[in-house]
Image 1 (cartoon, rainbow, N blue to C red):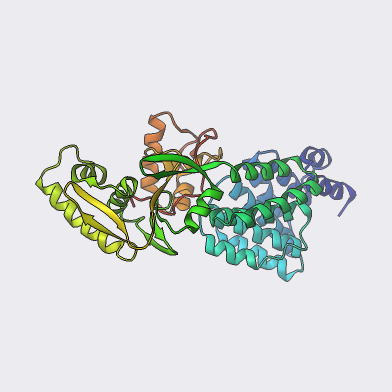
Image 2 (image 1 turned 180 degrees about the vertical axis):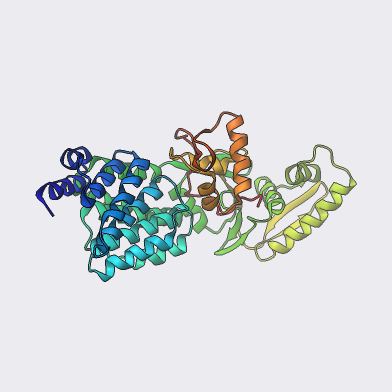
Length: 406
């Protein structure tokens, strides 16, 4: 490797893409193409970066498997940053295996970290934790160790393990300071801001107040019966009943939880659950059926008792009933929450992240666009959707997997 390539690689490692381009911008050999691609990615020119990395992978000879694998890892990270969740995980896994077999532990660990970040983005926390447990951050340079700690913090935040999350962010801050890369330091600071932001609302006895992640963690660890309108579950004393695929039952549970210890009139329940303006006998009959189903679903946690005016939620052991709801609630709020990160998403990537059908996501995006809440650019498969960062949305910290309508 010649001196210019070495100097360009060091510049990239230090977060100086312009310094790297000054050394290799006019060269078309394989190492220079790869470094140019990484530099363009750091500058935000992601399409150009992908093209350069693919040229570099083709330019490397058959005996340069490690170099080709490094190009694949770089392209996989670009796909993650650009929210191209259709990038085949098997391709990244094969590249990582090649790097491990050839003794490149640093880049192999970095490839595994990219895999963790992708799993974290689409909400597969169990797989992300298992993959992260197999990753030894010791051989990683400071910048990569900071990314590793951010992944640890991200999983802990979604698991509502705030002590672990704060410790990981503190380590990430220290390592980012050692790396002395402004973009990395800014990313750690954004994660710290998210950790301390209001992410939900507590609704109890007719009153609502905002919650931090620490408050949500404490609430879920308490003895209260919690109707979680962020994940569409009802939980108490370690028992969790998911109603994510039963939106009518969850609407009834939430209405009853918000009114506790009082009851809810039948007409109100019909309006909340069935969205009916005028209740007739068929609605009342359906309400009796759905209440019976809710009573069966929650039999270990609470009873749904009939009152003179309607129905009331009666917890079996919990001393209180509370509702945890998102900060902002409107139609398609879950889609908006993912777009609130300011990145450009494809509809297919959103469908993967939400666990919803592509058509469901497309309809939601079209309605949001007609309301002026999201914008798109590009055509056909290249179309991307985005919105400026919107305060009040919890991104994916408290979001469910599937949309409740699916």
